[in-house]
Image (tube, rainbow, N blue to C red; front, side, top):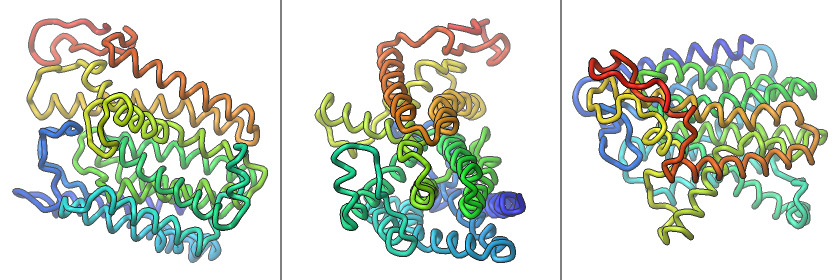
Length: 377
């Protein structure tokens, strides 16, 4: 528990310092673009919250030196391996000039370093054909790097609203911590708690007020960290089903795959072109109609914060069964299919203006000082 508390305290303090250092006029680290297709904030906000998260895990590593040197060595190597993707993302947060391809390249470098230094490789998938590939060292390394890069990128993709990506990663890390406890892997349990604590310290300042954003540096790093802990759990504990991490991470992963599909095959666009029709964007525009049309910063920020809980619930629909059935491959595979079908059905209902009535939120009496609205759609 001390690991979680120290990571939380360090992250909380460093993130506050980031917020205060970024006050006053325009700052290089500010997200000042308020008009992009995926921009839903009301004022320029510092987007280097990942500094606090990284610092929080460094603080946890210092504590682990006193209580578990093996875990301390592991988290130290994770920080070293994650440095390329974190620094590349941080450079983008400051300069806005690092292309997605370069960020993905450095994330792949981080994944390759983890394979080399931590032997964190996927050697079993329970997927016919792919198991033959990962049975070879080179195949296992390539598949692992691809998976780590994909998960890190998917966390960056869902980073669209206050508290969304950070809470989803906390939920996934909680699942990893629970399974690590079940299989008596104390080192991974401590590393997962360190990640949760660091994310909580950032979350306090990010949700609901949106005083700081995690940024590309933070999103890529927490995606890398989460993916690596899940892979290490499989590598160190063969009794854990290889479907467990896939189901636990299925929300951001499926969001990414679905976005590639609709951009490339439905709209004939490059998958790298940003747009405003991710599921979280649609929920903001067509489900959370509270203060729709308002331009006041307070109203926009509140509407932003009201969007994330929908996606937290969606993420939990995958994380909870992953925790309950972590060793049952067939059951986990069934839930992966069920989630994919459910996500697709929900997306098409919302995009066609047919969102379930119970989901829709309108303005309530007195919220905006205007005419009375209904509480439900």
